Image (cartoon, rainbow, N blue to C red; front, side):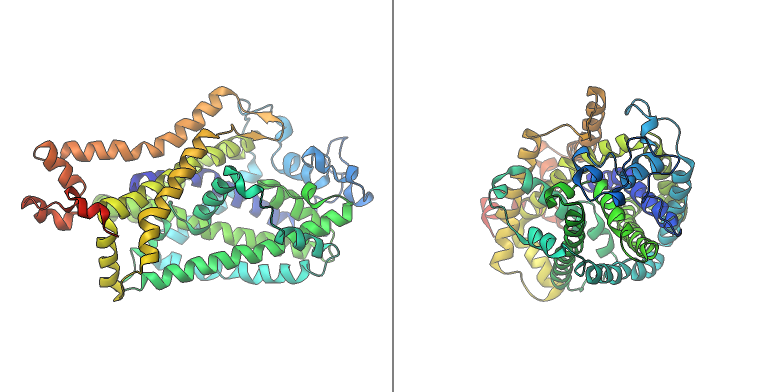
Length: 479
């Protein structure tokens, strides 16, 4: 499972760093008196561009055409990505030098934040983890004062119970929780490996999940207050304004900010927040890759700084495909396959491994030894039954209800979807591949090999005496 989550984190780095590079590009572009995504008189604009400030109609906004006619949309797709110079994923073109330069800066920031391990990343995180809260608070105070903000907040708080019956909603929610908390990426395990043995992991888990939930909930007010403002400004339903993917961050929000007084300052602050958020998340993902491999292979441990450089350079080189003219297609493909079903599968195997093979009782005893308190029945039932069953459900349903990726009206060719599945299955395949390797490398008969394979190293002496608790019915029934 460890190699699975390491590979997933490595794949995510290919396209996640590109998002940070986009944010950095927008941050630099914000230092102008007239933001470049306001008007249609730029060199990259097409004849179809319609100045949103000149019209308050839905036609002027171009919402129903995936924002294809707004200055903000054309700035992102034509000015930044140069998507109009690519016909598809098989016509990528060269890397854009502006985005490549931004990507280089991102990689440099990541390297010097990680090269000394937690000695440097622990200091950097004080900035990257706290600044977004300051900016979110400022954006919230500004957003709720805008006309139409109340309608947006009402739409945010309204519940569509019929949508809760759709499997895709639960799949998206589970995937989002994994991304938001770092579950299945090895981030939490990598950072917690630096804690003292007696660290109160229960307290940390409660605090982390609570802050994460409150942050996500409050961020919704920030987003929907601006969406309500945009919907009222252009006289369209909020559902026509709301979008997923890069469009919300790099099209809708910049356009909304451009209508505010001191728009350049607000834009700079907003994209600085995205930059710090991105660096903070990317640091966690890269740290899980580096720490996981360094702890496994002692040779890498002795050359951590050089190995860190190799990892970030490999990420940079592969990320170059995402900053070409057709890079958004590579980005979409990776976003769809690299950490979708595979991340849910990784978390499922982790849950089964801990709760069933290692055992909830043994796991609870370990926590009691660390914290002095045994987890109550609620947590033990969640670990043993609820979590594995729910994860198994979402993994199976995500495979059965799979839909190929698309970007706007562009449909990916079959070979691209096949490549995507190769990426997804390559990480999931690490579980049976390494399990087979480990099993075959162990001494003894089939039964002895199996006993050694499913028993922690610290309990190997029990296997030598023939005392394998996993071979007893009591082990599987204990909660």
